Amino acid sequence: MGKGVRIAAGITLVVSITAGVVAGGIYAAGGRINTSKSLELGLYWITDEPIAKGAYVMFCPPEGQVFFEARERGYIDAGFCPGNFGHLMKKILAAKGDTIAVTAQGVTVNDQVLPYSKPIATDGVGRPLPLLSSERYTLGDSEVLPMSDRSPTSFDGRYFGPITRSQITSVIRPVLTWKGQ
Image 1 (cartoon, helix red, strand yellow):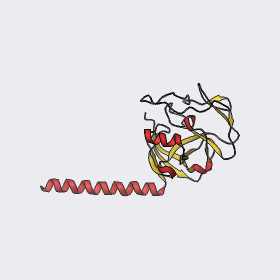
Image 2 (cartoon, rainbow, N blue to C red):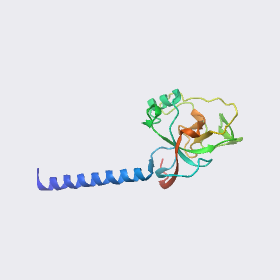
Image 3 (cartoon, rainbow, N blue to C red):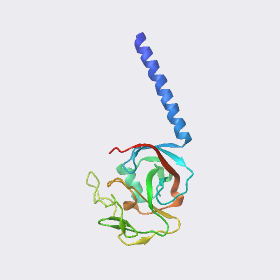
Image 4 (cartoon, helix red, strand yellow):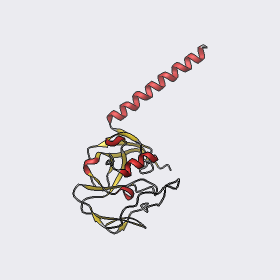
């Protein structure tokens, strides 16, 4: 191996190790990267803010058929949550006392249709997506509705419904984001 190749290999190794250490430090300090369509792409930071309507959150999906199928289809990743699910990042668009319904026009919260919430019948390869009941439902004390407010194709509450606050692992805040998609 020539001297130039050894130098290039050494530089590559040092840069790779440094990048790994920096990324690990950011993660340990509370930084999280979003690469999904549900929220703007970018860096989010774990906060101690309360779980509230309008907050961005990370949560572990409940163990249920809809999430096992979502993981198999690649809508969500494998990860460290119970059931081997990865965390999901969404925005809470309904909470205690809000009345929700999933209609053909979209998800309603207190009779107002949420933007980008119209359910689609099939995914990008033609597989049917879950269909929730269109009955009106008032969220209880511990329930929230995690949604995207920017992507019509997000796998969110329109397909799996409300979750409980106990499933939320963190409230996150955007730090450095860009529109993308």
